[in-house]
Image (cartoon, rainbow, N blue to C red; front, side, top):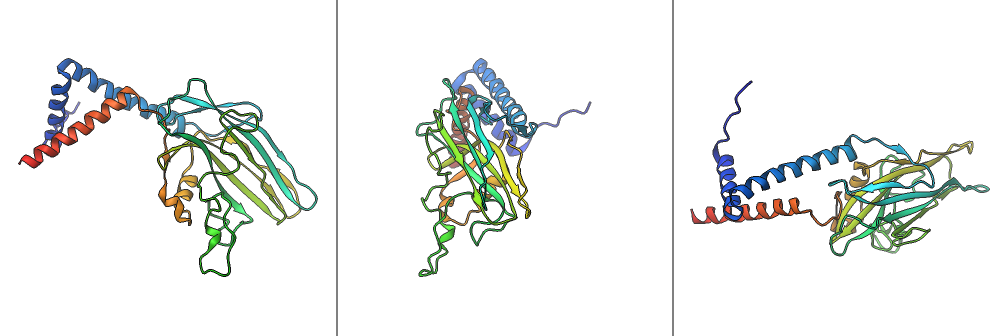
Length: 292
């Protein structure tokens, strides 16, 4: 078995200084326990991330049956999402799908950061495009935009009408759900139709959006008017398609927000210790550098 090479140079110096800092504030015994806790916490976070997002594939959603929503970082249960209605609601000469449900936060949820609220962010891909600047092969954030104004040179149809990145249909309890209702009914008379949606449950505070969980759905209508509901699936993780569509949205308003896969939980004690130790170590290293 090969012998591990000793850590040398700047990296070794920083590790030793960090150890001395831990020893100074905690003592030897507590320092060792803290380091073991930090390593265990990091490994647990990695395992939970892999099991909740990378390794878990999409599962079929049964209408009327709740599925659990967990923080993608620490695996703590946040609540449940239920899709109560998913059906073809087409009429004479037009084609539509109704989907309705909501999110219910648990009685003992992961404690959120102050000012946290829950919302939906929805992305869509397919045809027909709703606005002239959209490409039917690309994903874009599903928001109502302003109508084009021929009197101004600005392309108003790229600007979200209400100035919010969140899906506007429901931003509070509704449809029998205590935290956040959800409803959509896309409708069009232009054939063929082939629309695929990803709907993400997110939480947000201080212009930060955390993508928690997602489900996908959609419908297709051929030129011969044959209607097909797409699979209703729980993905377990928000895709890069939605996140990238958000970051690339042509409305400058989106640039004021950050978006990532995370949750809005108050950090647990192990995370707080890690953050405090990290901040203290950085401050000590800066002071040492300034004294040289």
